[in-house]
Amino acid sequence: MPYDFPLPQLLQDRLTASYNDAIWTKMSVPLSEENIGIDIEGKFASKGKPVLVEVHGTGIFVSDEKFSNSSKLGLTAGYGFKLTYSEFENLLDGKIQNNPEIPIYHFDEFRNTSKFPTLYAIVLDFDIARETESGRLDLEKLYDNPVFQMRAGSIETATLFLDKLKNEYNDQKFGNRHSFNDVDPNQPQGRLLTLGSEDFGIGDGGLYYRGKVGTLQEPKPLERRI
Image (cartoon, rainbow, N blue to C red; front, side, top):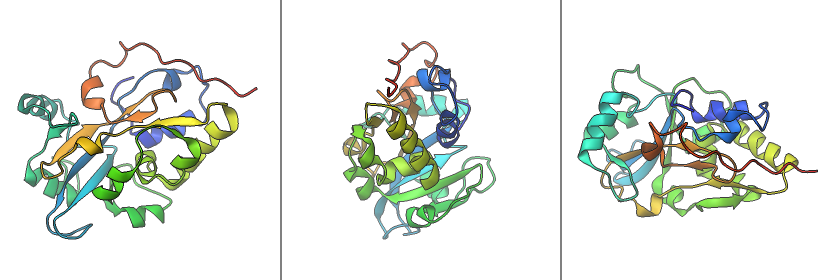
């Protein structure tokens, strides 16, 4: 499934889609990305602290030209694309290429907000993000996982999605994967997200999968609760 819709919308669509639908069985690269760098001016954290910026509905790597140019610069550890310092600074101001300025929510504000625009971003202290578990995790642990909540786009969507899996399937796990422990936040960098079945869940390997989705082997279907 191509790079068309933000991750929160895909999770919302899964709430009502059949489990045989491609939205459940095919790997997709959503229109969402994660960027990491230093908050030099202390806009969302203490000055000089690293932050994670979750962007939904747009992004720095949306344009094919930017994606191609970034590919030529090579990957960082943890398979991220390098950003310039000015690109990351602009992102913290809500400025992404030629897009109108988008709203940026500090994670504390995000947790207390119920409705969001089509294009927006959320900022979290990177040290907190790095401490979260990565892998196929118990559903109960994901309810309070800030990285999963940011990826879901709202607390409500995160809760409804986990409730659905919890109530309907025996395997009480879902993938929420990241490579934050391999990241040097002093080098600004970004990653596209991926969404697969519950065996894979959500990951940050979209830079690899972009252009390859649709050719991947279909994930194993979920086991419905009897």
